[in-house]
Structure formats: C-alpha cells, structure tokens
Length: 284
Image (tube, rainbow, N blue to C red; front, side):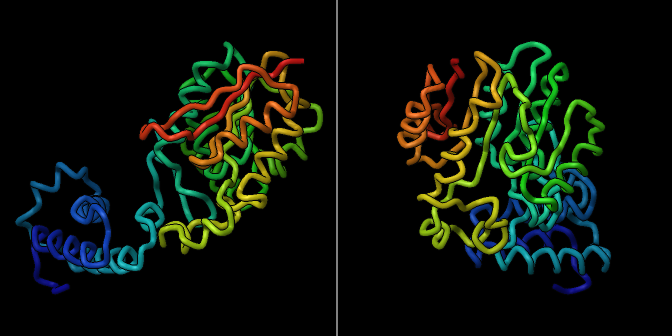
C-alpha cells in the first residue's frame, strides 16, 4: 500500500487482496477493517472516502490485511465478536461464538422459570451465559470451563457488562459442582470428530482452539459423558439442551433415551433447517 492514498482506494485494495485469497465477503470485511481503524460505523465510511489516509492507519490496515490474507479470523484480528446484544472480547483461547448458538440462548430464556438457575456447560468466551443473563436479569447463571485461559476471557466479558448474576468456575464438566442442581443446563461442548477436524476451513482449523472443538468417540464423547451425569445436577422438571453437529442428533437422542432420566426429547433446527440442538426434560 502507498502512503498517499484516500480511503476509497484503501478499501478497493483490501477488497481485491481478500478476494484473491478466497475470502467470501471481501468488501464487507474490508469495510469492517477500515471502520474499526477509523472508530466509526460502516455506513459512516462514506463521509471519509475522499479523505487521505494517515500513515498510522495505513500501516495498521496493512497489518490487519496481511493477517486476514492468511485466513486468521477477522474477529481475532479485531479482538471482538458480536453475539445477540453483546460485543464480546475474543482471542485464540476461545471459540468465536456462532450465530446459530443464539437460538439456543433464545430457547433457554423462554423455558427457564422466573428467578431460575442456569448452568452453561463449556462456556468459552461466556457467550451463552452472558447473553442469557443479559436477556433474563432475574436468573442466576453458573458457567464452567476446563480452560483457565478461556475463563479469563469470559470474566473480562463479564466485567465489560458489569453482570453480577453470572459466576464463572473452572470445572471439567460437572467436576467442581458437587451437589449443585439447576433449572436448566445449556451445553455447547466440543463435538467435532478428529477426522472432520482435519478438513475444517483454515479459519477454524488453524486458529480456533482444538480443545474447544474436538471430542473423542466421533465427536460425541463429551456430550455422552454430560448426559450420563446431568441427572445429578438438574432439578425435577429441569431442562437440558445440547448444541451438536448436524449429523449427531439421532445419537444424542438415543443417549438421552438410554439415560432413563429424560422425557420430551426433541431435536431443534438452526437457521438453515439443520438438526443443531437436542433438548429434553429431566424426570425422576
């Protein structure tokens, strides 16, 4: 990039470079990069298109563009990801929250009783826990993760929104919860099989944490383990919902049936009508 350029030329250059390496929405991402550096919204870029780009912004844009050309996720480059009404800090210690997971939060917020309790099993950045707590200020949320680094990110996000109805705990599934019981358990656990992991898009395979993605037993090992122990941590009539791979619904339903503690087992589709969540109610 040259030092004497205007923002229109900068946007065009970034767009062409991202398009050349196969980024699906190069213009949108170029606008996000430049608006981030200008600290303005994307629509507001129109007011700057004919302005000269300061050298500092030009250098920063170059660095961000090079990272994106290498398929590093834009959310990691910027350090933030949007989820429901929140803007969360993210880094390579946590998965980037996916839009379809918002459906899980919406379901939880509808089903959980007034002043109820929610367990977010495998919280990562805290997306599910914090979004649910934001939508339902009356509930108490406990969120656990095995990764200390992930919990640090989650706590940063908690402080960002000053939410005192969420508690983050280091725990391998239910290991630190002893006899705690909840009205609802939401679990977005690792569910990618090792063979599938090898062929994931580079943004995921090369940059997002494998610990938060992969699980043994065809990707179902952690979900099966959670199902086996969930009855010890649900109140009577409590609700559990898992996010899983689009070809795993039948196996998750079978495991819930086999556990003999669950009724009203159902699979729920995502925005693309793919089997993405399976839920059930706990029965003594």
